[in-house]
Length: 114
Length: 114
Image (tube, rainbow over all chains, first blue to last red; front, top):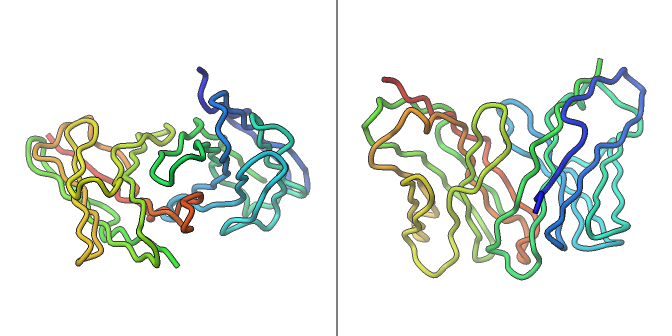
């Protein structure tokens, strides 16, 4: 199993550009989520999905869109990038059976918005 | 509402001495609690998790944590620090009663000196 994969690893955008961060998992997990990590802030939840076709907002959803058309994929879209979205983005997945199950994290995407 | 507070942003220990990383939580429900570790420029790895089966939880690499409901604490300890333990540590509590979303503490940076 590849686990949770993210592409790209690094990205530089100009203000106003749009892009999609890709996330895929091959563990047949129902639950997937996106976090951003900023210095001194820990990880903050952006959006999450409890299954295909079902998404919900997390703590910091503004400026981001998500959709979940398949169990495997959960892309994160930046509609109009802003410097405040410069961050490291992590995708995670978890099986649905228990709240005690760990989340598996991808390696992250480091995004810089100029 | 659930929240988590890591009481120290930085901890410095000498190699071979004990490690204590402190975490307090608040939760309206029975919490699911985790400790994750992040080495520099890496993703997050699960150290250990509280599953309600036992209050003393053993994790990987010699770490353990004790769940104390009366003190709402879940401190992470290790008897003897190793240089490879230098990393960022995150205490995590679930955000909802279903355990889907995670609420991260702001992290504790552990420095291990020779």
